[in-house]
Length: 380
Image 1: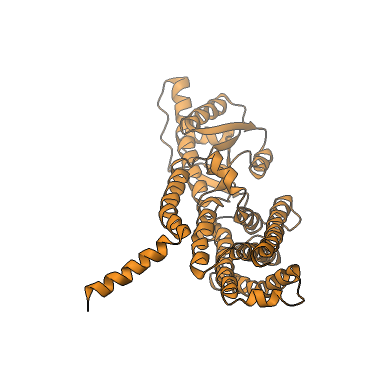
Image 2: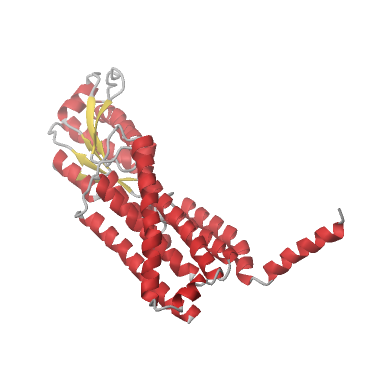
């Protein structure tokens, strides 16, 4: 083995990279950009939490207990809204005005002051497993100490210690206790899996078609560019249908994930995600000259989708600037729509599902139209 030969091979690699400025930019900016994006998102990820408080009791200790609960929650940076009934509290959770509710009545306060073990009615939205658990812990801590503080402040005497911890009668507006960590993240995993698989395959395959000059030969025939693009979309779309079918079969039959919505709607949304990824792949591949350039597109497209679309962090907890960027990423709408169906149980005609589905299809149409125009300039 001769060192000079090894060095010449290494020199050739350096020359190839030097002649491809786009590759150099990807090598330099991708890791730095990813680190900055994740760091900014994680360090600035804060979500305002609000609890709806229901106080139907009329006794002084009930009102004082509620006041101490408000003080305790406020010290944990949790907002409070007063609502007149449990039904109004549950509606506040559905409307997104609160993440949890707490009912403080005369029986609860009286029982705690008497040293009796009590059950308190609480509720959480059920669409954020980690957030729900943290909120239940905070509410439990507030309820366990507030009645005792109220009694001590009013009488100056020490109340009897309660017999055991306070238990929760928990209501989940969405999902339920049977929903585990996988059930809460599976909508994002489905969206990302469908997007990743069809985008990767389509970018590489379409670029390979260009390298072999298959596109040029097809466009020399009577085929119109629009017909060619739609043909490619239908062909790869058939592959996308099979991929979506396999992904959903694994999720529902093998992993046995829980889902509140209709399987057909979930399939439709996942197909729309794959179709959008396919059309984006066709658009980007139209400007790729080599397989290396096509490969460079994969992380540039997929990493922002992974970080900003709700797969890793809830969209509403991102900094304002990143939320604006997320609105221009198609997977944001896919993740949101699948969560509406799988966790909240909404149907196809629900506004939250319709808006996100229309946005996905609009992205798909925009990408294929732009791909057709780009192909005219590149090949004509």
